[in-house]
Amino acid sequence: MLYLINVIDRVNISFAALRMKSELGFSDSVYGFGASIFFLTYIISEIPGAIVVERWSARKWIARIMVSWGLITIVTAFIRTTHLFYATRLLLGAAEASFYPGVIVYLTHWFTAKERAKAVAVFYAAVPAASLIGAALAGSLLGVHWMGISGWRWLFIVEGLPAVLIGIVTLFYLADQPSDVRWLDDAERDWLIRELGAEKEEKAKLHRLSFFQTCKDPWVLCLLGGYFSYQTATTSNTFWLPTFLQRLTNLPATSTAKLVMLPALAGLFGLLLNARHSDQTGERKWHTVVPIFCAACCYLLIAQTARSVVPIVALTVLYSAFSLAAVPSFWAMPTTLLSGTTAAATFGLIMSVAQTGGFFGPLMVGRINDHFRSVRPSIFFIACSMFCSATILAAAKIGVSASSPQLAGAAASAAGFQRDHVIPEIEIQAGWPSS
Image 1 (spheres, rainbow, N blue to C red):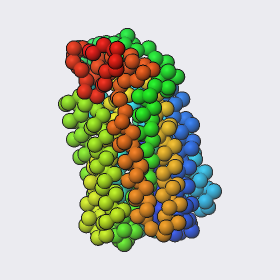
Image 2 (cartoon, rainbow, N blue to C red; image 1 turned 90 degrees about the vertical axis):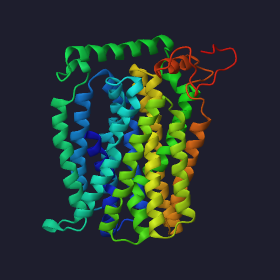
Image 3 (cartoon, one colour; image 1 turned 180 degrees about the vertical axis):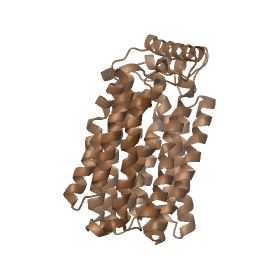
Image 4 (cartoon, rainbow, N blue to C red; image 1 turned 45 degrees about the vertical axis):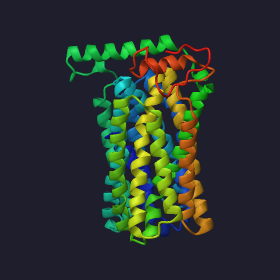
């Protein structure tokens, strides 16, 4: 529920832009920079916020995040100049920062490694669900003019209020640890605490890497590079999809907003199905790489060949299904190997680096649109970013590096395999033990 509201409030600007740009006289470059500048302040606070969740309290920190971003979203409804637009986007980035990596850390307090991809998938299902709800709300509100206020302004007001209200509920409801809840009986609570504690101890025995050692590890660097390219593409698509569809199909704003519901629904199914299969097989790398590659192919076809409404919408739907499907299996990789403060800081680092792609991508799309007077080159740019992500992650020797062979043993243990089995993703280097 929290992430659902988070995503709605972050990307409602993409729907508002269908009317906001013409009313305020914003060019694609102005809008693209405003969408991107959100990530400047977001990046700065990612790592500290994730550590706060690990060392202090997820409940209190997430409640603070919710209330602050809800208030800023409401304030965005009253902007009239480019400077106010940029200012509210900067403040929103600072308010929302560390929510996502903080929750990834939070999930490690509740779910074992074998169940974590499904847990991340259920959490991340908020992204396509938010598109469904956001598209429906935008389709209903963009055409109104209540009390002399434009519909796109009402969009921010209506979608900002729930964040404030549920942020207050979070402070009293969300539990930091299994030991804090009453809805588990004693046997269930003791079992969960014991399983999570044993997993944490096992990882600590197999590798004791500091955060700075982890940052230098080639395996982590591959995750950083792959997720950076992935986030460049997906964030660009998130902020520009309504514009892409409107210009490619020539549909009115309200119809375009509702059309976004189709890719969102497909993304929800792709996300849950791929996560379930990844957990069943224990395989993570190719459950991440293959969907990203397929998503890239879909957008390459739109950029190069698709000219009518049906194939454009169909390929957009497939892109959404494939691109979202990769997220749970990706995040299951670092959560399998790392724990504690090191894990929290590393998740924050991955998100911080990736969100520089979130800044770079929408900005580039705006510049490309203005330069070529067409959205097809921008769609080609997104396809190239996805191909780059798939290539980097495919080349990575997941779980193994010359600088930290301890990670190989950690991967084998935490992934749920017996010690005498070899995980297919791990390549054993010369001179290393074979199991």
